[in-house]
Length: 147
Length: 147
DNA sequence: GTGTATGCAAACCATTTGCAAATAT
DNA sequence: ATATTTGCAAATGGTTTGCATACAC
Image (cartoon, rainbow over all chains, first blue to last red; front, side, top):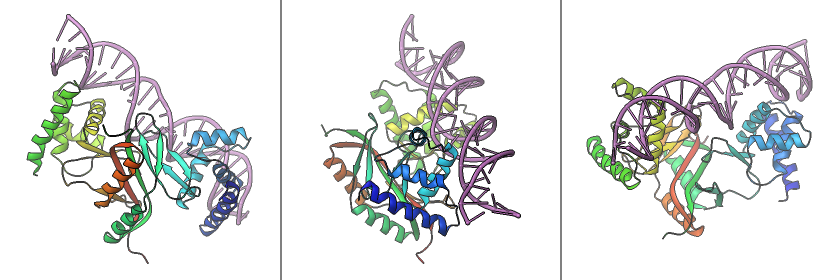
């Protein structure tokens, strides 16, 4: 799926989500979503704020934080809190499900996938009568081979 | 392993860790470790600060944070950042490896285990030439059955 | 004796909050 | 018409930092 295709698809999903919850369809919310889906990779709120300011689209940080909560809830965006204090975000519809390994020395992030993760999530939730909304799996360490 | 047994074992491990890194074996560091291993369950820095103050053992918050970093590094303690801003800690040597499900409505935390998790970690790290130090797996959602 | 560790308080800074003005419905 | 959303700036609060004193080695 190209970035352009994704942008119209997620726009639709967001509109339905807002409608279903009787939240208002403000231009700011769609502009933020569009900015996010026009880019690749991880980003933080400050970068997003600057990206939009550079395009002369003025949104307050408060609105960014507020909108991210909505996008998290409807799963169009994922939030990560790796080592740092500053949260990192990434769009959801891009490269399929994946998890992260974080090099704690360089801060570099590697993505990986394993189909068994979903099985684990599902069996743990069934056993404990738990309804999962989302999960996070991070491996911290450093790049290199065993010596 | 009883709490008392664990306390002497981890005391030994910590002493070796400090020695190996030429860090000083201060009474504060051992008092903090001992306080942690005398309790069960999750705790935050503020609680730990108060527990020790109640026993008339005065340690500064700065020393608590500093010592937690050491204990994390030698894996005697695990740090969690569930939803909230305040980090939660738990001693490592108590009930074996486990992961967490967090009820985002009540804040309640359920523990679970799955032996396949280690297999996933190991295969991901081998594939990517990565040396794991620790990992975190959280499932967020709410208690209840599928309707 | 020397340099690390502690304690205190101030600084930090990402995020949250309060409130008036704007606006989606 | 009106209740939600926005923007701004100030407040928040867990964690970090700087520096003088204490102390492990």
